[in-house]
Length: 419
Ligand code: HAM
Image 1 (cartoon, rainbow, N blue to C red):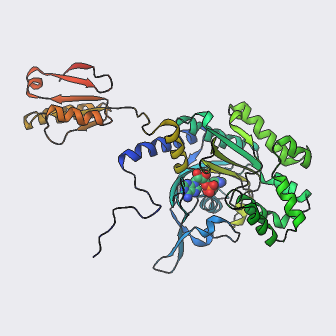
Image 2: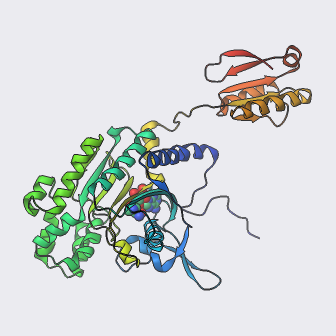
Image 3: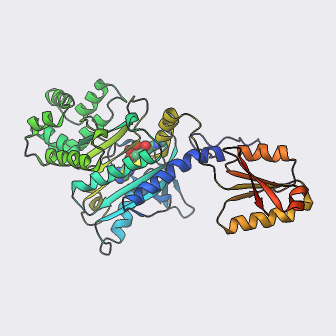
């Protein structure tokens, strides 16, 4: 038998305890933020039917699906994203749900990607979605919650920005340039590849979609628009897409995160189901791919067979934000010490140590009880490297006097307590 590698399969991750400190920092901030903004938790199985996930368009994700057949020949897949599953779950109970609903999940997703920094073949994503409302306040709330999550995990505002655009706006501008609506979806997917492939290659994709040279030139000119006012001059101030964008910026102002938002017509998104406002967050240095992304997708419910219903949401991955956080905060982000480490010199003190641990645990304290007797030096060395805040070591003298020394591992201060 050949030896089995100790490495996780390529692109997959193991999380050792030191990695979990970072991961929990991110997951805790996600949960705190989602609940702070009134989202309800849901979850689903990682395995999904391939049919739900497969789509016709030239989207990258449809080529990255991990698919397989089960023993009964069912065509299944590991989900590459949560949104189709959410749409399926909502459609299944559409007549009974109290819309609008605000749901969040932390979902593990799998994509067979070409690996780069910040891109893995498996990642976790916070998903926050609001289904059943057309109000721009939905977009503002979702972005507000994402901002809250970033601040909670310690990301300084100066380190990142949210780039906002609107597919509806780009659609209006394309239509005004004479590009028919049937071609817009393909144009969006081609333009989203900007930066990943050359402009010549994008032009070739557009040509293959039937755009003539004149239309291709106009399309690239539109990407040079760099403010809402400039866009308004082309689309007309009464354009619904312009009004929605203006409303989003005004609401962000009220909510205290307008400084993080910037209009960026180049944000298009790689998934074809978006229909309105779209957004992506990036580190200011643009070293990494998007930290999170999302937008409005008013047609997906109908597409999976449900009743047509407006929806908006976002996916916030753990990989990129982890990289940016480490870069901004340094590798050793401070972790709050908590609870006690309890040790003992010999088997004779063990029963007292167990009783002490039991009493502390009964009061709600975390206790890491030593499994074996230890020399004090060894015990305090290990406790110092643990996450405990206090260390108590029981020796024969402590039992005799009925008083134990409690060492604060942060301040090194020692106090005494009655056993
Ligand atoms: P997405 O832009 O494909 O959107 O992914 C959202 C986020 O997930 C990305 O910004 C990135 O942080 C993370 N991500 C995606 N792929 C990878 C990967 N291979 N490795 C590491 N991180 C990755 C969606 O998935 C949409 N379903 C989001 C959404 C929810 N839209 C509406 N509701």
